[in-house]
Picture 1 (cartoon, rainbow, N blue to C red):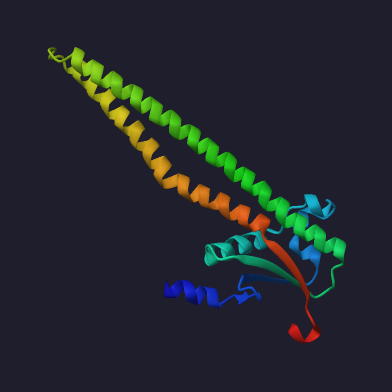
Picture 2: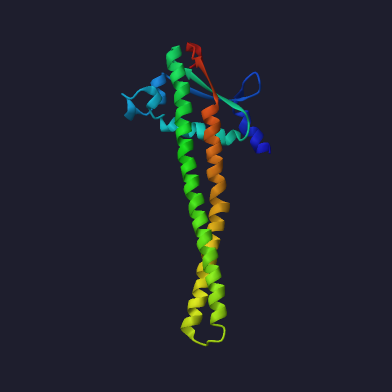
Length: 193
């Protein structure tokens, strides 16, 4: 717990005790991907370094409430500020949808693996009962092979769910939190640089 407190000490707090994720840039354009120079701001991709910084910062602060503060050396007018807010919201909503798709895909594959495992397990039990009196090596290998395949399928389904579902769900929640975060702006005074 002490480590968590030390990490949180690195961040400033607002008057209402929310963690402030502070981002400084020369101008608004620095927040966007250079490949999208001519796209409207609301459709542009955010700079990948900014995205990673926000994700890392929110990961560090855990469940603490937070705000995002942008500080610009060159003043940004109200329209630019509103575009930045929409960009943050839209971009993280977009990657949240992508994460949800990945979660749905993983859930479907888990369901298929589990269903195949159960079916194979029933076939295995049935075939083991049918060959109980036979001494043929091939029939016993076939029955044992089905049993192994059933358990492998079931094991993959269970581990896929237990190991992979939680991180995807956490990412989904994190993107939601970032997209809903309050965004503030502050102009950097000459002495602040």
